[in-house]
Image (cartoon, rainbow, N blue to C red; front, side, top):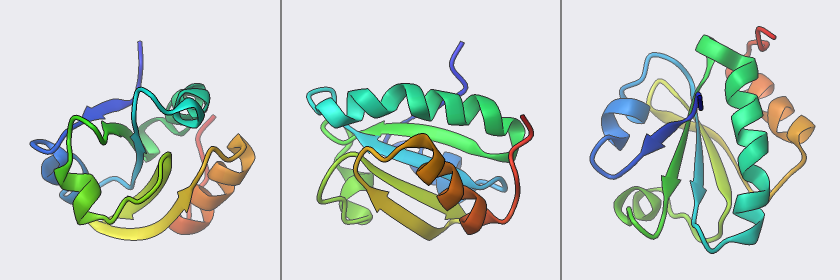
Length: 113
């Protein structure tokens, strides 16, 4: 079972902007090869960080509102939110260790696993 949350324009504010837990959001699309390559890495991160980090994915083709609001120009784009604010973002299918380093420095905690 996946630990990632399926985000959409309707639940984005509640799940991400109003979250008490830091959130990693993966902006992706079905047709995007790098997005598909990154998907298992996102799942691993969700498992490893457990309750310390909420991890969500939003399909930019099906949900244009949030990607527009956060000026998503290329995918995959990963954005880290804390207390409703963007604390960091990265574009492209980076290696897992680069993503976890980004998360750890942005939200100042270490994963539980």
